[in-house]
Length: 381
Image (cartoon, rainbow, N blue to C red; front, side, top):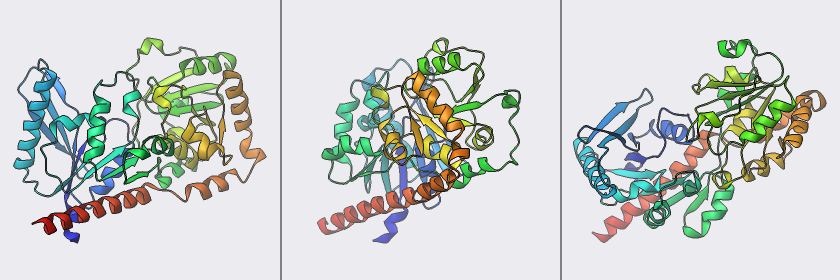
């Protein structure tokens, strides 16, 4: 039965492969070492004929970008995407494959496929994001029915979804420890755009969108003009004019995953200044363990999956108001002097998790589903 464990993986995602390097990228680069991985993005719209562009990345991932004419109706978009996917599978002679979904919105044009298994990696509650498609929950129900195994991006999301599937497992954000641990070495070259920023550096990296508490950032900057707030990452889905503009807030734009340790190594504190709203209710920020691995004290708003376990373990400061956040940053600035064992406690906690372990556990559950379905098919024939 075991030869199915190398069947291809066709992934449907709402996230662009070349955007922020996060959960799908961590997992799929590992899967690509053992099987072909086709990562299918959401379509881009233009005036041309429908087409698929396939780009093979250095790590063996084939990124597939559908192009559709912009003037199609919703129903026509699904029909055209279905035809594109079918011809793509035929052209690449993909016979044995599993389907891996990050977005339920791929369901209308993939239900005709005959996979060995269906996996739903529910990394966020997408229905609560700004501009979510009105049909997303309907399609998610269909996806739950089709799925052999479901993963969730964190513990709170698992609690919210667990009644909906019999084979569902929480996989909170994991970590590539060595990569971020490099930030602790003093040998990294200081990035040019951060060189002339002097004073205590308080940093954040990631997407700047509706999940960010902009008034909190503004308040901290106003109250502590000598603190320098550094934000790395693209601004998405919110108007850039809404961003707080203060002399001590620095927007340095998006950086590559590879560049991050050099930036963080210069920071005194890392922050998770998330708003408390629907879009952050179930998030499990990958940044939490990454900041900690870099040896940087962290202050976060009371996001459920940060407060538990990191806040509870005394590894992250939790604060929600401007005043409390400032107090927490002040405590965090003295943390390493006051608690010399902090880094050791962090490392012990982080040693329990890694993307390699997460990937292996997911691969085992997926392979079990493929094997079970294969036996079922063989018995039925």
